[in-house]
Length: 468
Image 1 (cartoon, rainbow, N blue to C red):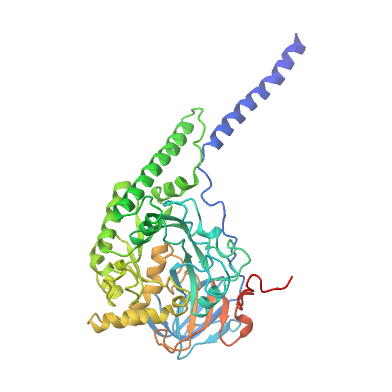
Image 2: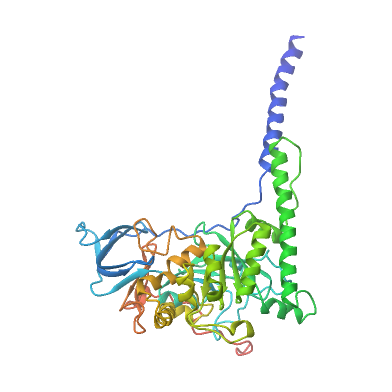
């Protein structure tokens, strides 16, 4: 009898442990899919502390400072002021008479997914096989060796958002990258930057799918396609919400089947993924805003936004950035009603005005694009200072990405993404002299050893050109 009792006592704890493990397993299962399965592997370089002295500074958030010093340490700006008391061991860059700004940010680029002519036959940015391809991610097409990255860096661009193309109603996720050389896209990814979702209004999706005799072939078809997708996403989100709730209540439930397309759309509804919407016309912007309210999500920015000047108060009211060109227009009907004062008028309405390139050449000269837009506004009497205008390529751009707490301005605690210019940055004669990203010198115009060079700068050999 004693032996039987001992055996029973030995078994009971094991049974209790098994029961606890099953409960723990059930709780562990009650989790949503990993929201960042391809995390950034970027590491801030370990660089010695240094100072830039006696610079004229456009801070990027609207201020101008003269004869000012800044100190960089561990990838951050740690001091900013006049005649700072510096330790003798700190290396120095004399910027007397020169200008310093934050690194420029291009929030609409296709570098790495569309290559420039003559570099490589690489066009992986437009998955035009269905009107809604929210399941695709631009980062899975990014080619890190695209020579355009280094050319943008030479123009002072330190951060880029790479977006899918605009052939679809919903084209897929965009990704924010640090403009550094890397073997992998993960090595370029801005750590913990919010993902974006590319949507497109107007002519592009209806032209692509109308030519195939399928929805959408009209703008009303466009709206129906968006709404159908958001209804499906709302149901999908609810299925996961119910599953998590039931599991936490102790119910024995299985998770819903994963759907990559709806997973991205549900991420928007949960507030984790930011909408960047290709949209030219003011009336369509209003419809997209109404739809966002219908389904309970927010729009971060309207891109291209040729008619943003008509909708500027609406953009300000809804805290939506207008991401615009300085003067591109007229290449299709929805791009006809443009004015050169577009960016300036959006800014005048106290909305978030942003300059962008959507082009491998313009991205090399974003400072000049800002100057053009500023000049157009000043010719109509808006009195825009260079310090205020420069926000369009720095702080406001960072805001549209949800990164204004880290980049976009020169301030203590911000990332040390800094450009030293040869002249005033809005001069047509000015060039980026040195470019730092997180305090690491990534480009030096006077030192060829600090100028990244892709193996593909000379292009590629055409098929058939090599003898067997």
